[in-house]
Image 1 (cartoon, rainbow, N blue to C red):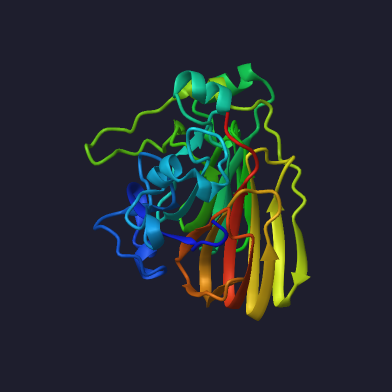
Image 2 (image 1 turned 45 degrees about the horizontal axis):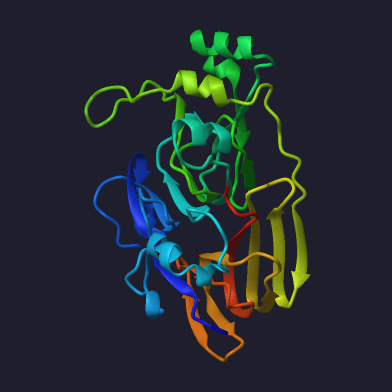
Length: 328
C-alpha cells in the first residue's frame, strides 16, 4: 500500500448521570434520548467502539481493524489500540476521581492505565475544575477523606474556553458543570470514584465509591506537570500548537491545528498514525494523490500509516494526537 484513505469514524455515545444534550445541539450528532455525557469519537475500547464509515474497512469497528489490518497502523505491536478520543458534555459535575497507572491497572483491572488530558471546547462563566489536592502525606490524605473534608482537600482551578490540562494517572480531578472538553486518553475505562457529592443514581441509591483503590493510586503530594505549550505560525493564516509530547507525556502527543481562511501543510514524524478531531469550523483535507475530503465540526478520523503528508484548508480548529510508544 502506498496511499490509502483516511479512516472516518462514527462515534459511540455514552449516557451519563451528569450529561446533557449539547452533543446534539452544538455538534449536530444524532444521539440517543436522555442525558448523554460522552462521545467516544475515536475508540477501539470494548465498552464503546467507534465504527469506520468509508473505504475497504467500512462497517468494521476500530477494534476489528486494529486486530485484522495492522498495516494501517504501521504494523506496531500491542494487543489494544492505545488511545481514545472523547468529547465530554458536563451539564452537571462529574464525580471527583482518580485513575491508576499501567502497572496497577494491569494487576487489578487487566487493562491499560489511564493518563488523559483535556482541551476545553467551551465553559460557562465561572466554571472550574477539581485538579489536585492539598494533602502532604498519605496519612493526611486518608484522614481528610475519612472526615469528609472535601473543601479543604480538593483544589479548584478556574477554566475557560481554549485551556489545556494534562491529567496523569494518580491525579485527583473532576470536570465540573458547564464544561465541554475534548479528552485524549489511554484506552482505558477504569475510574476510581473518590467523592460524588452524595448523589444518587437512577436506582435511587448513592453511586459506588472506590476509596481503597483511590488511596492506593493517588499521587501524594500532588504534582503539577511542567508543561511547555508552544504555538508557532505555519502556512497561511494558520498556527500549530504543541500542547504535550514526550518526555512529559509518555503515552501521547497532542496538537492543535488552527486555520483562519488558511492553508496548513503537515508531515508526520516518527508516529505510525494520527488521530484527528475537528471541533469547530469547516474546511478540507487534501492528500498528495490529489484526493480531497470535506471536513466540518464534529468529524473525527485517523490518518493511517500510509498517509505521510497532508494539507488542510479552510477555517477550522482541530485537535490531533499521536501515540508515543507501543503499549506493553
